[in-house]
Image 1 (cartoon, rainbow, N blue to C red):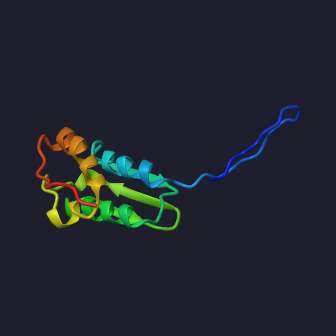
Image 2 (image 1 turned 90 degrees about the vertical axis):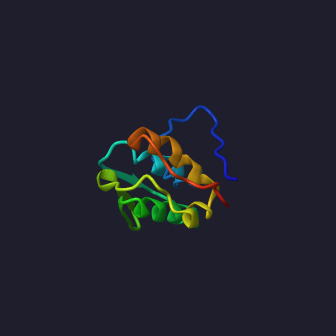
Length: 115
């Protein structure tokens, strides 16, 4: 793991780009269900769990586009409270959908998560 060692006495300035992390983006993707509109996330990691969550969101009616720079989720078209079992079994993080789905739909049908 990288680290920064900063010694006093000199003024610091500049920018550093920090990439997105899977453990941060998966709960955020689940939370996009709650507002019923468009959400834009930047610097999402291009990982299988992220793509699995995207497939889940699409399967329940969300419009999702993922390109090199951003991930857009439009949850205004949410049409189902049932998460397909085959998609849930792909990752443990699918459990993050329970709270947002209950908040938005008042119910959810989901199997035990996999992963």
